[in-house]
Structure formats: C-alpha cells, structure tokens
Length: 473
Ligand code: AMP
Ligand code: MG
Image 1 (cartoon, rainbow, N blue to C red):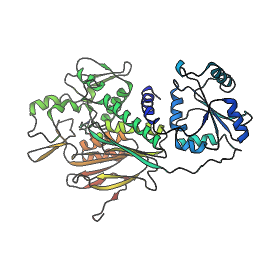
Image 2 (cartoon, protein in one colour):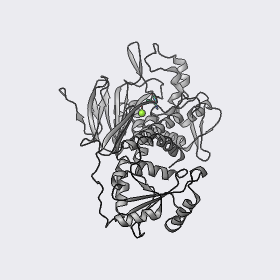
Image 3 (tube, rainbow, N blue to C red):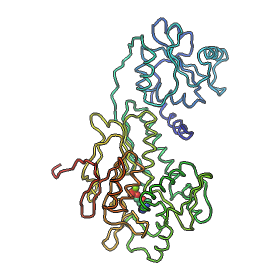
Image 4 (cartoon, rainbow, N blue to C red):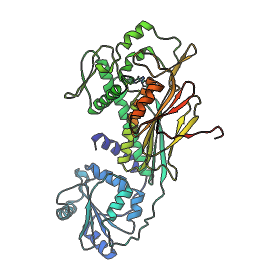
C-alpha cells in the first residue's frame, strides 16, 4: 500500500471516529484479561498496537475492531485486550504500566510486529496469531474463528444485513457515482471518502487544464525537453501508445494538438480555418511521443504538440478506485465515472448489477440493458459533447488523420473486464467506424461491443447477448 493511500485513510478516520462511541470493552491490563478469560471460559484476543505511529494498526482498529459487526461478534464471546505502545511521549502511560506491557511483549511478541493479534486461552496458551489483513470484517472474523475451535459462542453471529451506500460527486467535468454494498455505514463512509480522494488525485495528475499537472508540464515542454514524470503517468502513457498501435492510430492521445480549433460545448458557430487546422493536424502522431524507460521521461518531439487523456482517463480512474474499494474489503460495488462504469460482486439483494445502454437520441432513455458481474461497460457517444454548425453535428471524437470529428456512429459501448481498456476501445471504435471497429472487437478475446449507427441500426459483436427494451417496457 502506498503512502498517499494511508494519508487518505488517516484524514477520513478522524471524521469516522466521531460517529459512534465505543461500546466494546477493551482491557489494558494483561493479568486482569487472563483472569477474566479463565473465569468466563472465553478466549482472550490481545492486540499489540502503536496507536500514534503504526498505520496498519489504525486501519485494523477502524475498519475491523470499531465496526458494528466486530463488536457484535466479540460481545459476550471474547475478552479483548489492547496493549498500546505509543511513540509520542504525551501519549505514553505511566512508566510502570509501560514496563508491564513490555514484559508481556517479550513473551508474546518477540518479533516486535505491529499490529500483532494473538488469541490465548485462559491458561495463556497461544491459540493463534495474526495481524492486519486486507479484506472485509466478515473475512477477518472467519479468520479469527479458525483459531477458536472448542469455544462456544454466546455472541450474536447472525449475518448482518447488507445495505447499499452511494455518493455522487462531480469530477473531471462529469458526474461520478460510487456505490458500496456492505454492512457497516462507518466502513462505507471511509471507503467512499477514500475513493473520491483517490479520483481527485488522479484528476490532478492527468488534467491538461490544471497548469501545474504533470500532463501540462509535458505539453508545455513539447519540442523543448523531456519531462520526468511519476511511474503512474508514465505507465498510463505507455498503455495509451499500445492502444494506438492496436488501432492503427485511431486512438491517439496527441489528438489534443488540435483542440484549440474545436469547442464541443455547443458554442461553435463556424468551422475552423482549414489552413490553421491542417498545421495542427500535422502535429498529431503518437509515434512522436518519446518515452525514456531508464529516466522515466516523456518528450513530445514537436513544438505545439499536446496530449490529453479524455478518452482513457475516466476508465483508468474507474479501475483504480474499484481496486482500492475491493482492497478495503468491499465485496460488491460499482464505480460510474461519468458513464464509464465498472461493477463487481453480486450486486445488491437478489439483483445483479444492471447497466442500461443509453439511447443516443433520448436523454435518460435506454435502448437495452445488461446484467453484469465483475465487468466494465463504457460508452462513447456523439450526444455527449458537440457543437451544431449549419445543421450538422460535430461531436468530440476526432479522426487523428484529418483533425475533423468522426461521423457514422452515434454510440459505441464496450463491455470487458477492464474499464480503462473499454474506455480507450470505445473511442477507437468510434473513429474506426462500424465495419473496421467490429472487425477489431471480434478479434479481441473477452471484449464485446454494441454500436448504434447514424441510421439508428444497432449492431453487436459476435458473443454479446443483450436484453432488448421493447416498445411497451
Ligand atoms: P470518450 O468519451 O471516452 O470517447 O472520449 C472522448 C474524448 O477523448 C474527447 O472529448 C477528447 O478529449 C478525446 N479524444 C477525441 N478524439 C480522440 C482520439 N482520436 N484519440 C484519443 N482521444 C481522443
Ligand atoms: Mg473512451
């Protein structure tokens, strides 16, 4: 796990920590805990933690021990003991108390692991050892239970009901929606905060509007010098170039070299100047994006060249945040990054995740839907961003060879495991057109598509089964 991730967690913990008061009793004295374990015939769960320096300890505390689910599990069934080893002077208890904790650590935590979770019986025999583990509360409880054979539970072990928690925000100029299905509102709040903060971070990195983003630095230095970038951006550019190769240049992040000539916010009234446009088109060529693996630099060979991630960035964010949410134990969830959607797990209740395919001609209308599990569904449409000039619709997807918006298709939906790939391919197929686009998708394994052409014909790739909307639905 990286540093930034912990910083997100820390900032949201402060907020989440205020939501509920502690109900479970955590003892602090080893001998007292052993005594209670013996007399009550209950296993003792002992945690060695560093409350003001050990980040995994804080995560364990907030995402496991402080959840309603864990409290419900521990109640009446476990004796809980926390032996804290704070680093800051002001957090340390009296010397004698610290000496006692150290003596216990010398016996039970010789390796000095933090957090260390040890289960003992009333005779101080170790039944099991564990620490922080990625995953859900339920998984953690199952793991603990594996040490507790022979002990009877009096606590309430009924499965808590799953609920759906969602948050909508505006990011990258589009509406984003994050959904988690889980049992605990506090965990949901933390996960949703982390996902949103992560999206904001990626947006800052790839934005070409933000003057200080790494992407803007690359653009400003076009034809001048190579710019050193973070590995994350370097890899994203590398993957973008692979898609360019695969699509014979239909997908090209250097399309942005012409973006000063077009506006797709319905404000344009005349076509751009031919001659000026042609000059900029000459700058579009992904082969002039030079990556230096050894130095991690990016160089745009020609002055005026520009890159932009409009066709792949949202898919990337969707994948990135979905993975983060899964790592935090969310078994079922969804990220909708401005129409670039990825969903995992079993959906909610008895329903699988249902994704509507937008009707290009009707705002909020759908032409069909898909039931999906662990799948991304991404649509590129000419109805999203465009300008009408002399009664003709000029939409935001550009043919890199001509510098003009592509015509022929109204929408392209790609269905595959990975939202980033789906995003890049949706734009690519839009540029390639119906025939070449279908040929490409039919060659790729586990990638399917749905196209709506400008005669309103709907065409799908070989293996896609759709649920059609009939007139009376
Ligand atoms: P999407 O909605 O994913 O199809 O992305 C469309 C956006 O991608 C546009 O608004 C542009 O920012 C960018 N774009 C347009 N044409 C291309 C292209 N040929 N290759 C790569 N990106 C493009
Ligand atoms: Mg795209």
